Image 1 (spheres, rainbow, N blue to C red):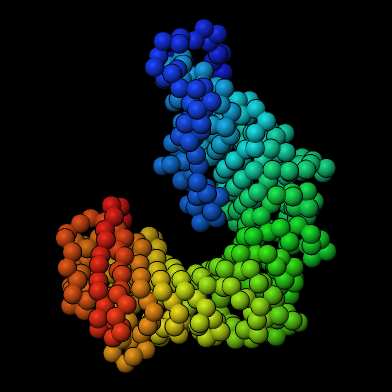
Image 2 (image 1 turned 60 degrees about the horizontal axis):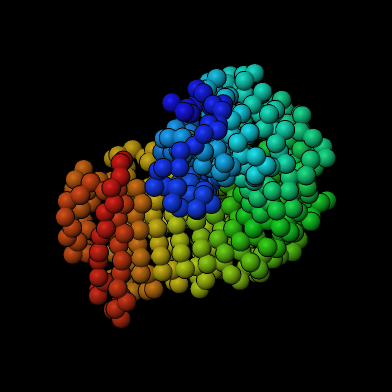
Length: 461
């Protein structure tokens, strides 16, 4: 075999046959084709991307594609080895083998000087062996080439950051996601991020969950951020609101609430910012996790959020955020609700959502970890609320799309299927899909004239 994971350093053949029809195409065009074969989407840099799954599915395909292309024949190998763009994705996941070490070295060499996309997954202290540290050290030597990076690190991670060069300029860094398995703050990480964020002129997406207390003394780099995601466990409320207020170009803001947090000071007024937090470019607000507080005290600070049109939240926060719905009732056009384990959407919660009178798309996402018996109940209760609301004229008048993501297979939950048939003239062929889109027409009578269409897509529970 010309190339493989085990033999990643196979030298290039000097004699390449030109008899194959593929050579009738320009060499540069073939390089472009090869580059598109290995295109990677943004999934690995989404903090919701499941851990331990970074070597599965599409990631595995992109990870192995360059080696597969280089192993077809000598002609394809020549193209692959002279196309550095296909070698720029590096994935380090547990367990690390010697073949992975060779593969990573091969990628670093063959990618030449191009920017790198990196996923480094080592979320257990026991797994952070010397091999991981050596790999991380080698990646640090190429830190000036980092473009999109996702680091899932163990608690004691100072060993990873202590060798980070103080004067390193991350000129290509666009996205940085740092997710420790357990939310701990270490001085080494704080110092590293405070030093490096100003040295990252292209950084526009930052997700640091629980490990970073933003410095409010340095503000220039916050002006560049379009996306910010932070877990609020260890961050004082006033400090964070001050920092967020200095990032007026944010288009998406995600805040993760832990079970208990000093962020809101137990609902005390002391955590409320002194003035409104103006985010004139913000389009999408994501509120996840758990929180028990009086959210109404924060409504005045949202006065400058004029472009906000998309809201995503967990079921734990639906009822608590009713004041937020009233504030943005005429703005929110897309609402997404995540069912969390141990929670459900009550009638009161669903009625609270009905205050979003401008919503055109409403998506209910069921967590795959929900027990099978609870998932159909969640959807059924939500449908009951919508149905009762439609009878008294309080339904979402502009709703056009209702999407159920993660809905159980219909043949397993006949009760839910019967409910749809009874209330919405639901009639669809038997299928094993996992998602259903329900589209409502624009009839003047609202739900009475609604037209229902169900679309199944293949999937697994």
